[in-house]
Image (cartoon, rainbow, N blue to C red):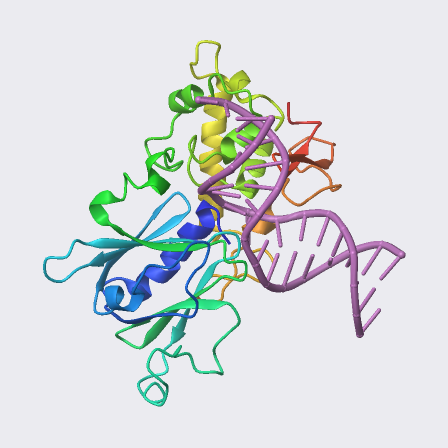
Length: 303
DNA sequence: CTTTAGACCTGGGTGC
DNA sequence: TGCACCCAGGTCTAAA
């Protein structure tokens, strides 16, 4: 469940359970997700206090205080394609003592397939990370090195922040001969959009996905009516999606088990063959493949 | 430099 | 029931 609105929903769901709490124990069931998990995860997390939860692009940022002289670190989490968190009541001290040191301390009744990491908090709450496809990632980065980190260094502006505007988008699209669909998926141009919200934004803006990116900016790289429209549309779609708790596909749910419902609001994504929902449009949604990803659009009202 | 194809994984759905 | 095949919310890497 991983575009910006879903990650933001996860952040908001986890925050009340995590912020200000201390990690009692960090348990890893396997050594890696997409990349190796941080070395000595438990030694580095146990006892640390969670200062707060943040987000950058599709990354969840778990801010950790450190005792003593060690530098503060951020536990950076990416959900990949299939990552999710859930909050569970811990099992208390009882049966933990019965298990071997280093064992994965999830009661059998609760352990689910693909539960890879558990953060056991001091107040008896387990934060469980589950990720069937393991495209997700976790890494520990010193707070001061976060922005310069290779994963963050080249990422574009936050679409809901002040750094995202028509002038900047126009500049980023200038000279790019890639389709606008692919350009908006490029995290260097704008952060946090994925396949769903790019399709939805282009549909709402009435812009054809095959249009070359450079055609949306003026020849001199200035903002145009379309660049401005795209900026506003992207913002609106993301804000609506966050307000709806994100989109819930397949069996994913939010951290407390409730479902986001923005998927009921899709006007294009995954609606191949169905009528276009743009006001006054009598077309239907088609599917094409761009850069290896499905694009859903209406050839009638997207120009 | 820009752009694309392949790679990484598991699971669900479809059609034979 | 089994099996082959396609598809899926991402993004890094190598190659063109």
